[in-house]
Every structure is written in structure tokens, then in C-alpha cells.
Length: 189
Image (cartoon, rainbow, N blue to C red; front, side, top):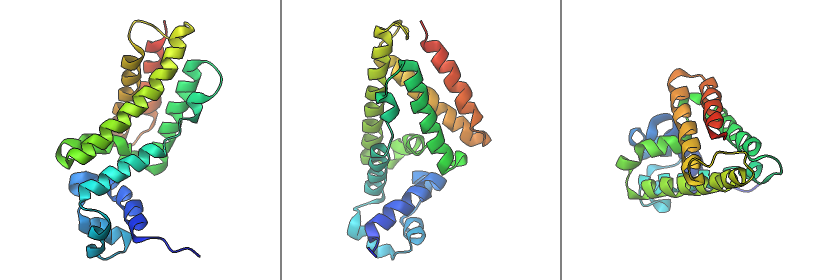
């Protein structure tokens, strides 16, 4: 049976610690305790808590499911399925903890340059993927041309992230669906 590496244990458990406590509320001691590894082993794998957090953001980005966006069908349907999957992902890790990306975005100014850059890269890539589908919808007449595809993609993502923040404070994921319904209605021509 393969042995789980200390680095992987740190990454796996740190994600949960960061979700629950935020970047600033989580200490290296909290992370190593959750991972069940000696505190000194942390620095064998990461130069800082910031480096670990940036790694987690990038890992989160790599695991984002964009397959619904590439499916056949109307652009708005594909976008709805994609954002529904993102809402399910957040629900699966705990509505009360919100979206990991939102948590790190909130802490990015105090978490340091590495975390801020990782969050920015992730949001940019997500925006580009959503904008591509919005462009298709604009070309087919399904989505308004009143704003650029990139502006509308940013609006959708910001609506989603804002709604997950509200859901976190009220422990009710239904606010995400309500907000997305309003956002998708605003995309219609």
C-alpha cells in the first residue's frame, strides 16, 4: 500500500484549516497538527505558509470542472450547469466555509504576493473560460452584446462569489441559486 507523503498530508489538511480559519487565522502549528506531522517537517516542503496557500489555490484551480462549458448545447445552459457544479462543490465542502477561492481572495491582500498572484491567475483563467462561452452566446444571439464577454464573465463570477459569501454568513446555499438566476436573466438580450 503506497504511503502518503508528508507534503500531501500538509496540502490536504491545510486546505481544510484555511477553509475553516482563513489564511490569517491559520497557523503553521494548526496545519501540522491537523496533518498529524511534526511542525519542523512543514519547512522541509514549504518555505512559508504563503507558499503553501498559493499551492492550494493552484491545486483548487486545476481541479475545477470546466467540462460543462465544452459540452454541446445553448451557451446559457452550459453556463448554468457549470455554475451549478461550482455551487455543488462549495456545498460539498461546507456552505459555512464558502468557496475556497473566495476565502483566499478575501485574505489575499494580507496573505502576501504569492497568494494574491495565485488568486488573480485563477480568477483570470476562470473568467477567460466563461467569457469564451459568453462570446458563443453573443454570436448566436442568446446573450446580450451590451457589454463585452469578459465584462459579463466577470459579472457572473463575482455574482457567484458574492452569493457564496452571503450563503456562508446565513448557512443557506439557496441564496446562490437565487443570485445566479438574476445574473443569468441579466445576460439575456
